Length: 286
Image 1 (cartoon, helix red, strand yellow):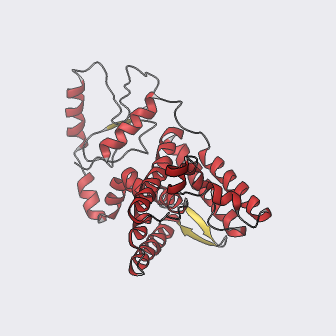
Image 2 (cartoon, rainbow, N blue to C red):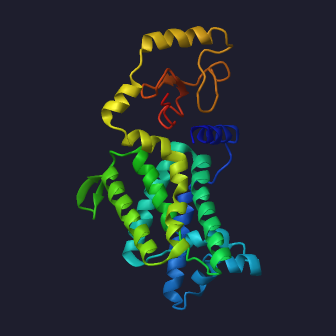
C-alpha cells in the first residue's frame, strides 16, 4: 500500500493538471439537480435513466451509467441537504490536503470498485444491483476521520463530538448492516459495501493500522536516536548531488531550492519530506 501511494503521489506531482478541481461541488450540485427533478417528475424517469444498470451498459451501450449513478441521491429533503453539505465539507478538505489529482483518483477508484462489483453480481446472478454513492462517500468520511480524528463537529447541530467517535459509530453500524444483509440472504450483494470502501483501505490502511496499535507500541516503534540517525543520513547524503529529498514525490533541494523540507518524528527512522507531504504521507514503520 505504501509503494502504491508513493506512485500515486509522484504521478500527481509529475502531472499537476490532472484531476477535477472542486469535484465534490460538482457531485453535490448534480445530486441536488436530480433531486429537484424527482420532485417535479414523480415517475423518477431521470433517476432511472441515470442509475447504474449493467444490463443497460453492456446490452444497450448506455455507458454514462458507469458514472451518473453517483449523482442519484438515496434520500431526499432536509436529510439530503445535510448529508450533501457534510460530504462537501469533508471532500473539499481532503482535496485541499491531497490536491485535486489524488482526491480525484481516490473518489474515482471508489466508483470503479463499486461498478466492477456491481457488474460481477449481474454476470453471476443476472440481477442489476442497486448502486449509489453512499458507500463511496462513507469511505471518504473514514479517510477524513483517519487524517483529522480530533476535528470537532456538531452532532444534530447541537452536540460537539470528535469526528473519530462518529467514525467508530459509523463503522459499527456499517459492519452490522453487512452482517444483516448476509444473514437475510442477500448473497453477493451483501459484500458490495465492503468492496465499495476498499479504496479507503488502499489509501489509509497504514494510518489505520498504526492508529489501532496500543500507544506504548507506537511510541516504542517511533522512538529513534535522532542524533545517530542524522549522522548516518548526512553521511549517506554527502555522496549525492543533493542534501534533502522528499520520500514521497522525489523532489530535491537541488532541483527546488525554494522548497521547504522537514523530517518526520513519527516515522521509524530518519525520513525527509517536502512541505507538501510532511503532513500527508504514510509513516514508515520499519
